[in-house]
Image 1 (cartoon, rainbow, N blue to C red):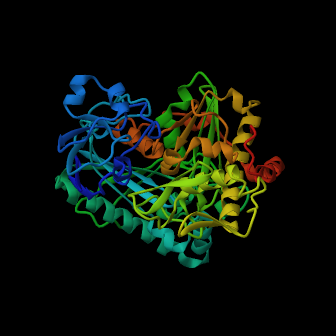
Image 2 (tube, rainbow, N blue to C red):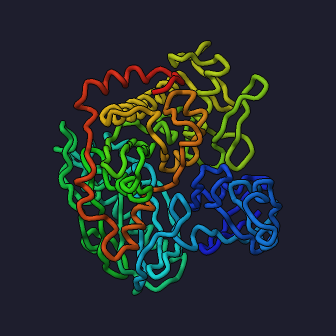
Length: 499
């Protein structure tokens, strides 16, 4: 089946009965409530073709809206060829579906989130906030390793220029693709706003890494950086200014600043926490009284890296595993036979293995050294260990931030899960393995909040980053705390008890 997605104009193929969520997620559509049909943030309008209403649609829309073709894309399944309009791209929306307040400006702008694994860019109309095009792809630095430590080692061994050139040429090509897909005039491009972790910033801008690699892990600069695209070697028809938002400390970069801006943590009257569970796991806890931030080297397991049959969340990946009648049942992205397993599927699979007694709380596989999920996909003893390391780093880091604030997980009123992995993670499974324990009502997936923060900065005449914001955010260096090592060892257990 052919699905044409407006306003991108992109056309993708889907199998009959395939979840529309899987199709749209690859194009950059976000599912703010994690696909639970609660928020209407993923609502679409069917312009051509047919998409039968689901029970959640009858609760979300009026009879008139249903007749006009409005549906929740997170609940829809492909029935035939479609032309749909993605509503969240009409205006910029935050996790609560309220538009960002901004003064209209002339021209076009680009917001970019440079992740360790993936890079996402959006082309926006500065006058309306409308997203005109989206592009996403693997970070071209992946050939030097899946995590930031590997890339730092290569850079300090004499390959820094190659790493810098790879990301800059990759971004240049992505921006070219944005304009080619829309045929909008280059003369309208006014500015670019970028967020990313500290290592991604250092590698892109050519900063020395030695002081970041060694304790106490100090970034080369904490100041916002401005460059021209020509200065960075981008091959564009025009030369425009590029802003890389400021770092917050150690391995906490402007990507987590974007999360703070998007979720309005510094405006909260109650204690909230947030985590971006990527290769470089970044965590936040605080309120309007102040915020603590930190990062942990979670590794790539959450994104399918270093897993024997691991893969990204694409066609053929097992993305969900549940226990039904004493056996595992799986959901495969795109349908058909599975080719591998992505991060959310891995967490589900280990949780299911615990429930069925196939995996012990220590992480040891009960019999043999592998657990078959669905042929030919299985997880090995090493896979379980990789997940344990990632899980322990995040769980221990969250506990440390709360202890530093004199709080417990019970005091946290909202827990925001940012990033692609957080948007697909099964909360129940995450709690079963002890990754966190805030409950499904307090756990709120917020999609690519880092990119949303970059858009807030892009759409603001004043730059989007409030003056003095870094003075209200304190960086906690976990590696310098013996307590973190104690907690890390404790959290290696696949234990569902409270943190």
